[in-house]
Every structure is written in structure tokens, then in C-alpha cells.
Image (cartoon, rainbow, N blue to C red):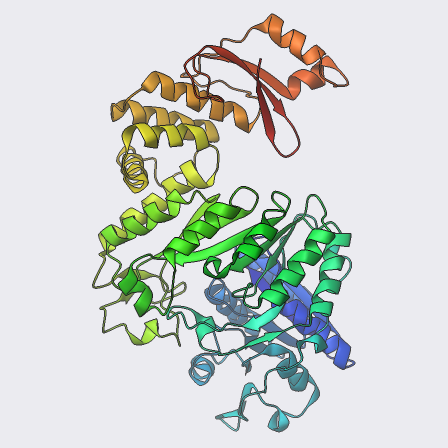
Length: 551
């Protein structure tokens, strides 16, 4: 009996491959074939993966190929061909199917390419003779054959729920889910712009699926819908269902267009419990000429209003892309400062990738794009921004992750910006340059060193109000957890008798537990009420937050 193995090579251990699970369950439902899946990630040793696949001894090996794993996949199949010469090697996914004939001609180790929406293609490939199968490139008598495209699935409900019960028990993984396929927009840099139209799973089906996630206590479910909030009756129906079935400790992540929320939606979102929803919002650029060129439309006033209205309880990620047409270094600065002003939890800085089949890929000569010839095909320069400037933004991105996206410097960096900088961009640019000059930029750092470097930076730049800045930094340092180590700049001056008295009034099982989960510190400035007075602040470290009170 033939053994079929589907392989997913993810970018990180915590990710799960949704595609291979859909394929497995679809084939199981509509045929007698059994598919085994093997999952790993690009951080695993290549030889370990090759050995694992060899030990599975597949008759048919099917690999899902993406921008993050393409080179890894081709290395694997070349070696697998040597040790399993009779195995049929099959590839699918966006990285091998834009120019499939060329891919097959250039890679003799690959026997078949599956093109298009995978469920029906893989089922027919496994069940029917090749000459009757659409969506498959194959070799016959030295020629590459193709019988045409497979029609996409109209009724998505015919696709089974992708996860097995035991997979729903993996609490340390991010699970991915889709309630629709396709995208109505035509952003020039995105592969989703190639296929027009949107198809939906039924609302009833989606609710049943979400109930399974909720019943199993999954921590993070990421919707992969390209724009989740397209049809108000539909997306609001899903959100209302999730609110009715709220479960603490679970988070749902959605990619949304914040321009199109109306006041009814805003008022609904204000009722959502904190951290139950995460929104990823693609701003990309605020440059009007850039937005026009990439086929995006940001209503900047409305976007800002909507984001500010929901930011108190919805965890927000706002995205920018460097390297877009007409976006100079100075124009990118304007976009960054606009996004920073909205105070999302995370600012995600991406770099343009020239993906085959997109509108951008047809404008290479027009805008003098230079880009990396291998995945991820990232832009090196164009007519509007130089390689040197993009390298500066790479360093900028690291500084941003340290001092903004980590959420460990909220108070101290806000104070630093308020006192010393007119533009947030200027600060992150300046500290990134400082890291590079000091040789800190390309090495990993312990958390305490990232605090120490900020103090070093403050002193070297001779920024204003150093003593007050240290009070804010002390506060941020204590918000993270009870310190095991105090940095040199941290002058601890707590009243031990007062601390003893405070913890005795708390409901802890023992003194040891009380002192482990609390801290008291004296401050020369009342940070909580923003006024100059000497106060003691009590820190209590709860499961998901740190609670502070003035004593």
C-alpha cells in the first residue's frame, strides 16, 4: 500500500501549517487514502529532517513551498532523491507554481507540481489517472504536460475542519484559521491581488469551528483572511458570537481594514474584553502618491479616529512597508511618526519583497528596483531610497523592537520623547546609530543590558532631565517582574518595615510567596499622578499584569 506523507516546513516552531491539514482532512473525507503529515521548521537541522523523512519511507512525498522555506525544501528534495530514489516527489505552494513549467524543467528531482487551490487538485492527483487530472504539471515521454486549471471550490463548507482533536491540545502553538478565501483589493505588492473575488465559509460553519477552539482553551488563533472585516453582517456576527462565548486566556487575531469601521462597530468593540481580540492593520504608507501607485486607499483621518477609539482594549499591530515606490527616507519618516502617534501595541516594520506575478514585479525597470535574487526577494534599493538608507532602517527596526515593541519601556521612552524629541522617528534613528557605533547592533542582548544601553545613550547625548528619566526607567524596570538583579543606575531605597507591613495585609499563603510576587520602591517623583513628590509605590505581580498603587 502506498504511503503518502505531506510535509510542512514552518518558519518557527510555534507555527502550524494550515494548508497541509486542510489537504489531509479533505483527502480523508472524500477518499480511502490515508495521509500522514510531518511538520518541522527552518531552524531545525536539515540532516535531522532528511533522516525523519527517510524513516517515514513515503511512496509519495508532498511538500508545501513558501517564500520562507523554498531553499530549505529544494535542499531536502535533492537529498531525498538520493536515498529514496523510488519516492514520487511532489511540490505545491506559491513559490513553485507561478512559473511551474520552468520550475519542473530546472529541477529534475521533482516529479510533479500541484497548482492552484490544493484540496481538489491533490484528491484527483491521488485518485485519477494523470491525463484526467487538472492542476498538475507532470512529465510524459520527456515532455512537460498540463491539463489545465482546476476550478476553485465554490462551497467552502465542503472542506472539513482542519485540526485533529490531539492537535487542539498543543497549547504552545499558534493555530491558524480562515473564514474566507480571496481578497477584493489589488495591492500591487501582494500575491492575493492575483486572484480576484472572495469566497466564504458559512457563518454557521465558522461558529461551530470557533466553538471547538474555545472548548479546547487554545491561547492564540490567527485568522488568515486577507481582510477580515469586509461584510459587516458577517464579521460582526462572528465577533458577537465570540463575545457571547468569551473565554479568558484565549486571543483571536484578525487582519482588518480600519478605514471601514462605522460608529456601530466602534461601540461594539469597546465592549470586547481586553486582549480577547488582536487587530493587524496595514497602513504601509501615508504618502498619497505611494498609496495611489500601490492601489491602496487610506482615509488617514478616519483611520486615526477608529484606532484611537479602540486602542484601550484591542491589542493593535500597525504595519509599515519600506521600499515602496515614491517613498523616500523622509517620506517613510512621516509615515512612522503618524503611526507612532496612534500608540498601537506594536509597529511592524516590513521591507518590500518583489514577488513574482504581482504588479510591482512588472515595474522593476520603471522604478529601478534592485532586489535579492533568492527568497525572500527583498528590495535593496530603488529610484527613491538607497541601499544605505534601507540598511539604516534595518537597524532602526531592531531599536524599535527593543524600545517600543517589547512594551518594556512605555513610560521611560514616552518621557524621553516628550522632553527631548519632536519626532519619534528621530529618537529610534538616533539610538539605532548609537547601537551601531558601539558595536551593539548585531549581537543578542540580555534584557538588563537593553536598559543599561538606554542609560548610556541618554548620558552620551546629554539629554535633558536625566534624574527624572531614571525615575521613569526604574518604574518600567519594576513593572516587568520582581528584580533579581539591580542595575548600577537603579538606586533602591525601599522602606523595609513598611514593605513587611504591606505584604502582611495581602492574601498570600506564606511570607515567601508574598515577597516573591510583590515589591515596594521609593520614587522621588510621583509617576502615577505625574507630580513632583516623594512616594512609595507598591508593585503586585499578578498572572497577566502588574498592579501598582501608591502607599
